[in-house]
Image (spheres, rainbow, N blue to C red):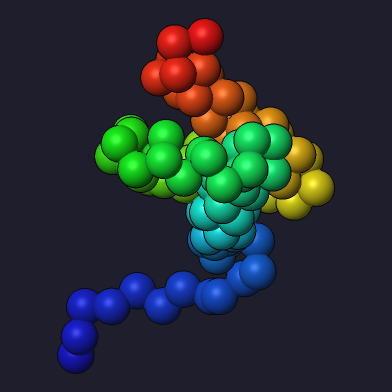
Length: 106
């Protein structure tokens, strides 16, 4: 005979799985990165390409930062997608603007 104690499976006793909010936040951060990258082209035209030619490593380094900002904002806001999109987009655009003005010497 095995030494096993039978337990009844109740709905209240089961471990509830927390939903994963990191994936939508990462997607929002990735999309916000490309939106923020397009804004200088819309404002300054094709001459921005020459500026990015020499400073691309700095802007490329913002890609994982943007994804992490999206994940963090999604987790903090508990998966509320509209607020996550708004907060992530604003933060990523602010980071791009900060880096762009820092590198351009304005």
